[in-house]
Structures are given as structure tokens and as C-alpha cells.
Image (cartoon, rainbow, N blue to C red; front, side, top):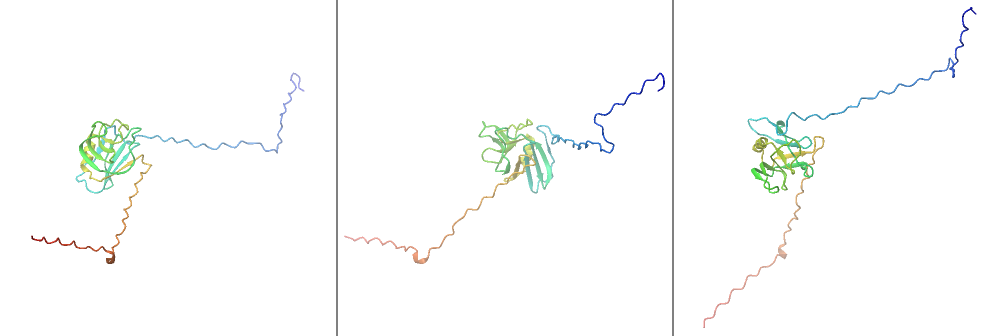
Length: 217
């Protein structure tokens, strides 16, 4: 030992010595977690309540399709599979929801008054059902507010009224992911064939007897 130096400290022994040939335990890396994708529903288009787009045609010929989509409060007009117009709408409010499905235009009236709601004006009315559902011009607040009808901006209602025909099909969808159910065709009434009556059992018509000749007295 060198004078003036302290004796070397004894190295502390591990409490759980590991053999040199013993494998060391390792922790498996955590599986990567995929980031959660949050789909944000953006605006359908840039239209504000009461606005519409109409692509004027030189002639309105060919098959027309009218599709209203309730969850986004829009209506689309196609002709020959080309979009010629679309608009904001106001459909039925809670408790008075607009029915979905396939409908036909049953009646058209430029200056119709409601016979259910205090003669409320329904300009450019196109009736879809006989119990009060129709397309017509009205106030578009930006949310469902009607009693079941599909309100259109007044000028759009006028344009659409001018190009539709009676019996035109109108499809009303809950949303674009839920198809509407087409009504089942009504079966033709079954008419029993008329069986001819054999001549042998036909009634015999006996002529009425001649009136008696008056006797002169």
C-alpha cells in the first residue's frame, strides 16, 4: 500500500447477480397505434339558405329526374342524366317529417292555397300525395320547418314548375346512403271468365198474349 492513500473501497455486490451466460430479459416494443381518422362533414356546396343554381337549357326534352335529399336539405334536377339545377330546400320539421320514397306529380297549381293550414299560400304547387305533401315555393330558413311539404325558393319553384309534366317521378331520400323503396306494383284484378250458357238451358221467352178484341154491343 502506498503511504498517504486510502485502501481501495470494496465494490458493492449486486443483490441479484446475473450469470454471464444467462440471457437478459428484453421488453417487446409496443405495436404502433394507427391514428384515429375523424371524418368531418363539410358543407354540401356553397349555397346559403334560399339560394339555388339553374342551368337554363335551350330545350327541356328527354327524361327528367327529380331527387330530394332530406339530411342535407337539397333537391337536384337532372335531364338526360345531366344536372341542370339544384337548390336549398326546407322539408318537414320534427313530428311532421317529409315521407321518403317514390312519388309522382298528381296535380299542378300556380296559385294554390292550403286547405289544411289556414289557406297558407303554396305558389307553384306540385302535389305528390293526396294527403298534403307537395313541392311549392316558400320560406327557406336553412333547416326543416314545413308541415311535411318540400319548400323551394320561389324563383326555383317557378322554374321547376315550368319544365315538369304531370306524372313526373320525384324521389325523396333520407340520405344518399339509404335507397328509397319503390312501391310494389299493384296486381291486376282477377276477373272470372264468363261461361256461356248452353242453348238447352237458356230461358224460353213466351210472347205476351194479344189483348182481347172488344165486343161491340
